[in-house]
Length: 166
Image (tube, rainbow, N blue to C red; front, side):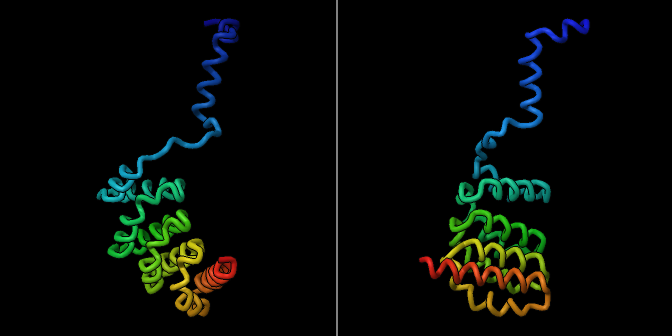
């Protein structure tokens, strides 16, 4: 192919399609099937589980069909990293994750920082439904970990503000 042949008008649409494919078209990502993501969450592969959680976070409230599974996963996992990622995912779902308030509140009692921090952040995003967690969150404003204490302070502020606007 000569240099002049590559510049023909017929080549331009192909180049644009290839470019759009590589960089994305700026539109919404294709809708994920939440049931398929729940299946991935049950995989033995950590990589599959983390990818499924990341996709659910991107879906936000549209991934709320996974809340029941995520509640159980948060309740029963012994892996603190996974617990933190699950809490973070529930937080990304906002008020759609309100049924998970008891499990997120229980996660505040974990010994490592990450799941506690992620659960605090999540509760702060759930709005008035997270009001039952307020007493525990208020105690956590005095946590030994400064990041956890600061996150708890912000979550308390958000929840109190959302209760006033109710």
